[in-house]
Every structure is written in structure tokens, then in C-alpha cells.
Image 1 (cartoon, rainbow, N blue to C red):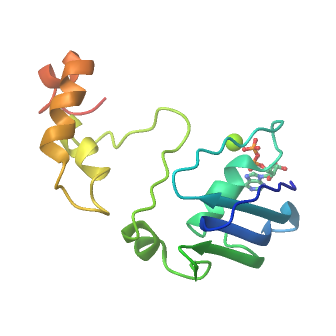
Image 2 (cartoon, protein in one colour):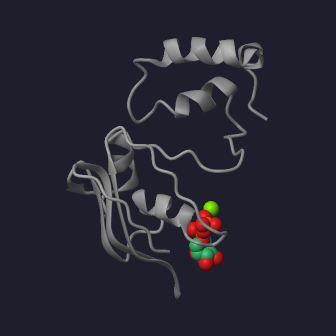
Image 3 (cartoon, rainbow, N blue to C red):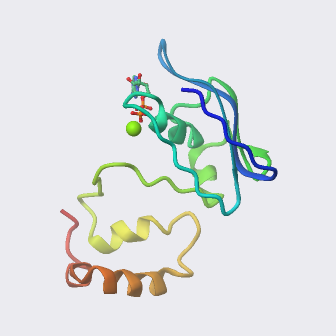
Length: 142
Ligand SMILES: Nc1ncnc2c1ncn2[C@@H]1O[C@H](COP(=O)(O)OP(=O)(O)O)[C@@H](O)[C@H]1O
Ligand SMILES: [Mg+2]
């Protein structure tokens, strides 16, 4: 995959990122600059490397060359938990949940990196949008 977008003061930046799965080169010199407040869509055919690009932010797979920068710092080699604590979150495609945990615990997982300051407020809003969540709050997730 190759991609280019420009902005002056990037919040998140991919600089010449290559990524491999064993011998398979999934990303080839990707350059993307995303500014604060900017919403960026990544569009491409199946197998183009969209998921891989997002996954390299968290180091799975790591960029085999090039850099992933967040707020001007190279995060390419940081452990995933430290990347997460910077407030970066990845919502995976599909409908995966933690089946052995309750609905509540599953939702709490999304708050872990940045704390629970707004959780009660957000939960109230979610209950309004999805009333079934409130009914099943303490149930196991599946
Ligand atoms: N876990 C994996 N192991 C080996 N090859 C993979 C793996 N995941 C993706 N690929 C390959 O990497 C390339 C990019 O895939 P992917 O990032 O999933 O594309 P997209 O999300 O755009 O459909 C494809 O050639 C795909 O077959
Ligand atoms: Mg994908």
C-alpha cells in the first residue's frame, strides 16, 4: 500500500512505513500525516493494507522500517501498553468482545488507557441510545 496526505502539524504521522508478515510485504513506504481534529478515511481494496497500517500504530506488526510518530515522538518501538496510555485506541473490525466478562466489564475495557473520568456520563448517553445495554449491564457479554 502507498498513501499520502499532508498537514502542517501532524498529531499522527507515518513516515516511510514498511511492514511485513514474514516474507509478505504488506506496507511499502507509507506516508500519512494526520492533524489534530482531522478525520481521515483510508479506502482501498481487500488486502491493500488498511488493517495493517492501523495495526502498526500498536506494533503488531511493527514497522520493519520507517517510523510511526505521535505528537512528534517516535512510538514505533514503544510497548503496546505505553502506546495505549498515550490515549490512542483501536476499535477492531468485527464484533469481538471478551466473552468471559460482563457487559459492564467489556465497556470498562475501553476506558482503561485514559481513566474513567467521563465514564458515568458516557454510560448514561449509551443507555439512552441502547436501552438493552442497561438491562444486561451485569450479564455476561455473549
Ligand atoms: N496475519 C497475517 N499474516 C500474513 N499475511 C497477512 C496477515 N494479515 C494480513 N496479511 C496480508 O497483508 C496484506 C494486507 O492485508 P490487510 O492489512 O489485512 O488489508 P486490508 O485491511 O486493506 O484488507 C494482504 O496481502 C494480506 O494477505
Ligand atoms: Mg482490513
